[in-house]
Image (cartoon, rainbow, N blue to C red; front, side):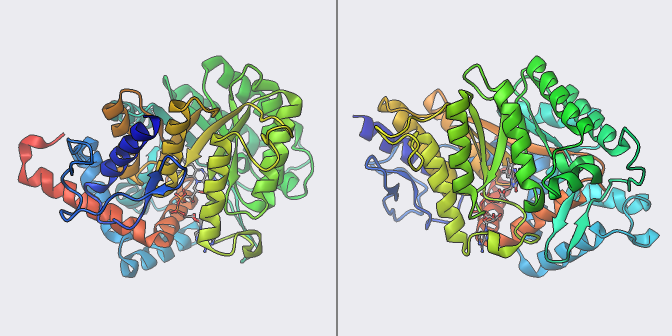
Amino acid sequence: MAALRHNLYARTAYRALSTQSSSRSNSLPLTADGKFYTPPASNDGGNTASANNVKAVPPSPLSALPTGVLFRSLFINSISSRPFLLSPAISVMSFLCQPNKSFLFDVNRNKLLARLMKAVVYKQFCAGESGTEVKETLKQFKKMGFRGTIVTYAKETVFDYNKNVVQDAGIEAFTDRAANLCPNIERWHNGVLETIDMLGEGDQLAVKITGAGPLVTDALAAKEPLPKQMSDSLWTISERCKHRQVRLLIDAESQLYQEGILKAGLDLMKEYNRDGHALIYNTYQAYLKSTPATIESHLSAALDGKFTLGLKLVRGAYLATEKRSLIHDTKMDTDNAYNAIAHGALSKKFGPIGEEGVQSFPSVNLMLCGHNKQSVFTAHALHQQRLQQGLPTVPVGFAQLQGMSDQISFGLLQLGKLHGSGPEVYKCSTWGTVVECLGYLTRRALENRDAAGRTVDEYKALKAEAKRRLLSPMSRS
Ligand SMILES: Cc1cc2nc3c(=O)[nH]c(=O)nc-3n(C[C@H](O)[C@H](O)[C@H](O)COP(=O)(O)OP(=O)(O)OC[C@H]3O[C@@H](n4cnc5c(N)ncnc54)[C@H](O)[C@@H]3O)c2cc1C
């Protein structure tokens, strides 16, 4: 019976995504025996339900998208789904990120250029430049049905291994290292506290630790302890999050800094993740060959220290700037690593941890971040399957970035509407000035280039939804 229910669930999940999607090649959720479920072929393009399938075809997941946002997404996707348009766009974005440019190309000084950037790309992917703009964006996401928004303050430092340069747009140089207080750390600290003040019920905070500037990144790169001002700042931020009941997700960044970032997160978890759930999360990048070993050691630490491991899982966003040998050789290897970690956590068994008679499994809260349809829906189906069969599992949330993969976000939300209780779904957004968000925006463009198939799929779905609304104005939502 449970298997039957699971298959019904799995098929509905697939339908939610496939009614507007052209891609029929992705097998989606799991069958009862744990294999990927491949929906039965139909000769109608998958748009009507067969006797075996659920009776009613749910509306397109994108029907929940406000019309203005739909048409902006359509415009952006019309560029990002065409390599001959996207490649020059990426070159322009990368150029704008470089330091020491003439007035004409300096977004910081050329206000006209900043306004153009804001209207064309910034609004698609970022929450706003001020508290008022951000709060308005968060309100919109809440209205669309999301549990909340994960909000990050954009300031960051990226180390480009290939060019051996540090990119820190929007972070002022800091020369007075003898001074007790670093103005960059102070500005970052205030920016993060300001972010917490913007959050409403259900919203969460994400931080990029390298945004605190060179004093912090130098310590991270040298694998030295963080400056006291910075560690004090992290404790204050965590206290504020605890008080506001807001989760704090610490972003994963360039490898050069990542070891210290993970350590800082683990130290905070030991203090704040003590009551059976995670207030603090570390981010683990599945594309790194070292990540399974890192996770295993952090699971052991959680088990020994009796705290909950906050495990935010991503594939990894720094492929273009990272030392290549640290990253899996192929995309498929990264996909397999991501799925193995997600399924391991959801099944409470990862390597020897959780193996019957060997070692028990610690308390874990999982946040699965990504735009990969197959990973998201197989993980969700596995979680449902385990709940229905009374098997041990861990709490899980799902998150996609603002302006990306709305099909998946709304597909997940639709499952909730169809089945009563749905998954916890978040949008994740970045705020800050256009200059501060440039690095982030460039990574989104690179991600779209690297996920050509998905971008075309998304574009076709957006186009179909736009066409539906234009042809039947009464059905606009
Ligand atoms: C809510 C949210 C929060 C995020 N937070 C972070 C964060 O803190 N830190 C961070 O680094 N990223 C973060 N990301 C971005 C994430 O790491 C990915 O870049 C992005 O989500 C694309 O991967 P995907 O899982 O969506 O799926 P896909 O589009 O299927 O996978 C693309 C990813 O696969 C990997 N890949 C591509 N080609 C290859 C190859 N040839 N060999 C090996 N691997 C390859 C890369 O990681 C690439 O980004 C976040 C994403 C989301 C949705």
